[in-house]
Image (cartoon, rainbow, N blue to C red; front, side, top):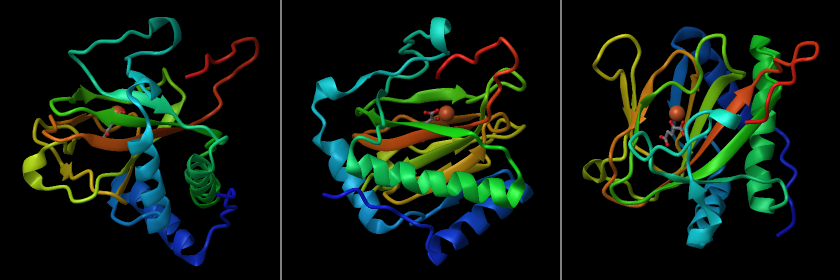
Length: 218
Ligand SMILES: O=C(O)CCC(=O)C(=O)O
Ligand SMILES: [Fe+2]
């Protein structure tokens, strides 16, 4: 397949408007059918085609603080690359979203990193924040789901929290749904799934390199 150069369509611009409005009003949004259906289907075929050795255990922390802790999370991940046309079409859409949000909200989003995630039956990711105030350059989190026909009994929900102990949102990981939220504001968790669960998690980052301090990758 040839790499598809995606210019923002009117549909995409409307999606960017909705995301921008939600970030201002509530700080998060879950949008069904956010990307073109064909892209979601190709990404599903792509993630389903990887052999076990195409993934590695996900860790917690950055650079030299990185460690695998199966009590916090036990999903497996694989970073996306523009070298693959299907992955490139997703990264291209996210690039349009990045510039679209910068234009609408002056967020200064600088780049985007993302990985496929595979949760085997029984896997979970305990409650966490993707960024701690002031100590990371991840400012906006995205999760895009790739599971056809998800039922409530399958578990594997994204539970979003704000201040209280009760979740403010419970999101099914149904193919096509995109969740976007401010990284330092919403603790969230993935409840145990009873089925294989696929997603793409990603983060828009700001450039925090100052003077001689080089921000470490990932
Ligand atoms: O897959 C999800 O629903 C969320 C994953 C997540 O929170 C993360 O990778 O940081
Ligand atoms: Fe997260």
